[in-house]
Image (cartoon, rainbow, N blue to C red):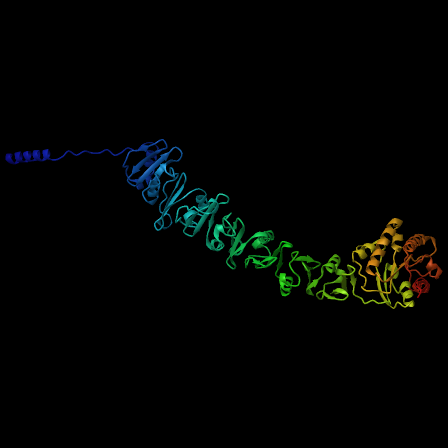
Length: 590
């Protein structure tokens, strides 16, 4: 038993002497800001496990390594966890805190979409997914990526780093579902989907559009989207696809409401002809030329009629205005005329000079029933209420009543009402065809609402239309209303000469006769007799035929035959007519 014990003791002594000494190493300490993060964050301890080195510090900051990663600290960024994995590897491959990225500004985010991870640094981010590896995003491209929703947005994870070599010092970076493109002059913007594909077809940044200058605008009408470029816009909708808009047509489309306006989305791109460009939209077509600018024809009767006439290459040429409302209808001007649409008559062609007169008072004419047509007399338009003729020879618009040597044209005031002494006297002298324009209240100076001004202004402005041709006689019977308003002598003579000159331009080969003002010899008609003398003396100075009507009602025995103080009844007209017929024979010799 003793030997057993001694043997055991001796054996133990030999074994103890043969075994090497065991040295127990101390666990590195964790202190300061790094230690505070480690000791207060259960997440940090769970991912980092134990420290494997002491804190290593430089002038810029400190790093401490752990079994599961690092904690990096700087005065600028604080203490941040960098977890083992592709993000940490990429960071250290770029020289860690002393490299491009600098110190982390967030902890490593793990468990992202598709098992990805990401961490932000002083100069950008490193993002990784199992299938794509780790890529960095920096600067303006990184900020643009954030705008799209980062890895959870449309672009998804980055698949390359930045690539250089684009025009003007540009840079791009590829992502799962698109690109971000940057240049010094435009900044960084995403490029993706159908809009990017159209941009690619156009030549990307080297093509007609240049670099993008905006993000895609989403949420447009009918789910559409648009993106701006240096020299144009690409617009997309599910129903029309992606189309390019540039220049004046793009500006016009934007000014008229873009996709929310009457035109809607583009359905084609620009078609270039020899002198003009056009582009089709859901709601119509926009045309542009250097001479006419940009205007559209929007869907409807005017557009359909214009297309049927050959469009811009057809009868009417390019549009000069957009479609405009007028008098309960619609009108649109083109290089070679107007299309005028009435609710019951459709769209008809009206020439420029005729339209100018029609537009002042369309109610007098009504809507055009036929397109303008031309014959030896001029350019005709058949309106609901009358037919007109524009003469290139005289530069005047006429009504289309037929006239000849047996025709007398009267222009006067309400003294021509009923079967007047003037009409009866002219018939007695052989002027059996008569065209009468009698407008109550009108004078050389006096205005009538029926013609929107004086007789002179209405005639010169073609608000009174006289027939075209060579009537045997043209008679002016005005002045009574000028006497009524006591217009000045100077005003009456000035306006009378303007009106007479206009008549001579319209009727260069016709006899033009000036009537004075019919009156009695009593005191109440003194001013009428005065104006009569003023007009007939002026006509005499010009060598024009004239007939004074001063006191003629008294001479004819018609003083008692007045409806009021100045207008004859039919009996009065019948009494004065023979005297006027005799005066015509004397003045005209027939």
